[in-house]
Image (cartoon, rainbow, N blue to C red):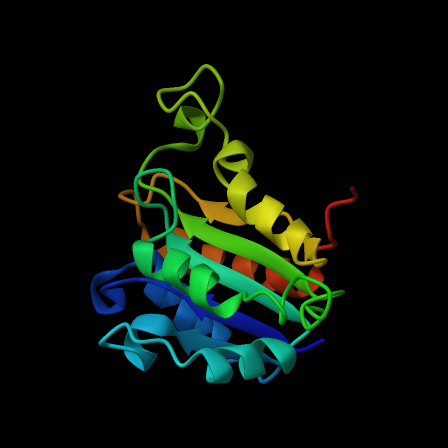
Length: 178
């Protein structure tokens, strides 16, 4: 299964988690790493190129740090521009049908803060619901997310293990059943 990881981090070089994940992903020949901010420093997306990338892969993972309970704005722009009517949905929009999409996120808050009783009052599953809804709308399958919480607590061992766990997750995870 060919996997495309669309990395959307505005400053990957200063990131501990996302940078380590990218470095680990690049060790695997069946995974394509596509960094949006590096590909489009002016944020002008080549829609045809992005659609070709999606078409060439079976599994697409959106990797990003959680920003204000959401994706970075550039990833939202990618959704708006790439997942077009007539391509991803609508009568002729079948290019994403049957593909698998998921998310890999890093959060500053602790795992406990992302519970109904926690500081943020919502689980990561609830926060990621718009991505899940979009994936279902384009006739694709949604994969359970991968996450690391408490990103300020970044011991070298924890970072290395999470990168290995991340690759294992995105290469073996099964879609959520509807």
